[in-house]
Length: 345
Image (cartoon, rainbow, N blue to C red; front, side, top):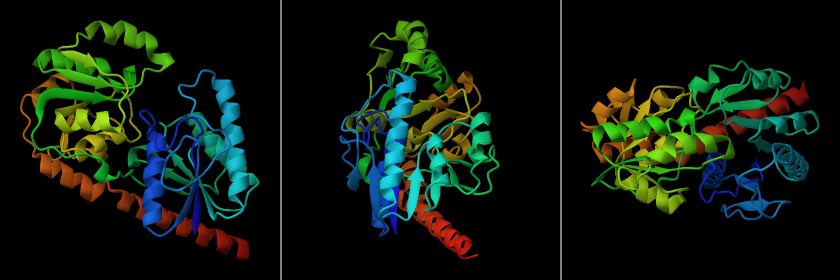
């Protein structure tokens, strides 16, 4: 079986810093190959994922400056990739909604992983393509959809890439988009209430520039609150592994939240606000704490009593690449079996 993993063309696989979808594709490619499957990754020419790579666009393009131009570029990339994959692939695994329109023209089964939050317009769009195999990345996300062929597969990571550290330093960490829904301002409030320094890393996208300038930047003093910019894997390891806790004070229904798993892989507890996938990713009292308010999060920070080795073991048991790849292989096999039986009928 050969799988076409079709990623967007804008960010390399794996990403240098920002790019949760691209990190997922890199991890999945690795896991599938270890499971004995052949994989080809459709991406851009700057990608370094250890798999066969194909592309028509040489360079990454992030951040996106024009949504309209980006949409045209992505459509060009994905339609070319789907056509090219017909030569030798038995499954087309897509990462963006618009690409499933090609299921009307290509014969292999199509899988779409849902990376974003629930959107009623997208759900209506999906209803026109009941033959696609949809993957929700959390049960919380999946419960909001009604497609006939949908199942949940949680993300997994390559634990060998994440440094476990038992002895933590006295600071808190935050990694994520600098956006209101990610609750960066609330993480700062926790730092101010506890007096424990906070180190922030994340992407400032144009749409959130005003939020950063008005609510975040005035609080950055380089002492209690520090902004270190984007974080590549080395910086991420340094930041998370030494942190006494990572704060995840989201203000929306998080589809998955891969950074929570990355923090826990380093033996660092996650203190998160409830919402979306959080209760599926963080086991309260075992790998972190699920909080209802800034006040509660502040209290938990001041009384952390979770063994880092226990946190790491929790990730090994629940969020490994091997577990994720095994579940996707099962999906691919089911899709091919159903596809063959429908063609024979």
